[in-house]
Length: 426
Image 1 (cartoon, helix red, strand yellow):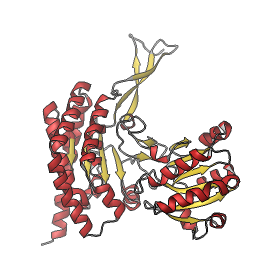
Image 2 (cartoon, one colour):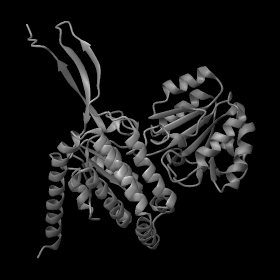
Image 3 (cartoon, one colour):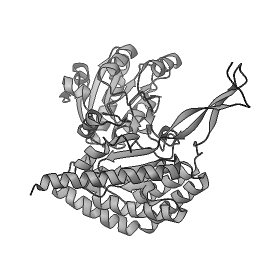
Image 4 (cartoon, one colour):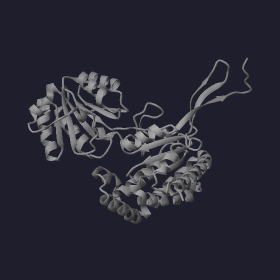
């Protein structure tokens, strides 16, 4: 008996059924009134808070298994649910519920010489497949955003968060039922088999968009094998450039926060660039602060002259997304050299300049080709919640279809609408 073949067939049949149900549910959700979608979101939020003890207990099972299997500290950090985290999930759902519903919005309606009116209407994408690792909060965030945007969702979390995701999925089902929406509007894949991912990303007849959230290996695999459009980012190699016209106190505060506020996130600074004209003033102070925080520095020769004992930065360090208390530091001649460095080594995620020079700030904003570009602010602000999106389904470094934190509007598309009154083309 060919057990592997039988398993593959079973997974294929299971995923095919999930896809069919999602496509049917998407039609119902797409026409759901805003008040109904919001009622579901609020009910899910309440269910999460009510089930806090159960959620934390299930998460502890995942944490124990993760430690036993040698899961990396950055992944364990993302995996852990706390009472604060449960409250944040519930609050995120309420914030999404409070947002403007973009579905059905008509913009740019204009009369044409023929007398017809032409505009654009915002509509759901349809069925969205989301594949993610570690973070169980993504299950709630993704469900909320997809639902608000009128989409059905198929969620496939990592095997390391299986217990947590099942518990959150139960809360989502409670909320959908309370609002009278179909259970299939949000389906959480209940298998850790990798074949489920392979099936999900090739079901073009049922799935309209795939959003991967996880490590580089996962995203590269999905980008390579998917037959469905993908919204993605590969790396978060974020830079902060300290200009020689920066305010010293601001520069130190922002550069320190951008690295140390949290290490295991994609918007954490991984490379610090400092103009040579201010390096001798900034780096000794920052270096001591990083050292006290336990951050390992890897620097260029000029950096090492100013900070004795710093490790040598290799070429690989400029490309690195550490997701750890490690920071690459380079002294550059000026802003142009900083922007050249970002263009070569950056990942188009988030980059910031610290300067009091308005003209330089404007140039940096215009010329740095990243999904988020900042002036005098920590890269850690590159987040859907901080941008007022309520939550995000991910951060896209693509240029099509969405870019930057992807919230509700990013999970819709537009179609042309034409209004006439018996008009015919002559």
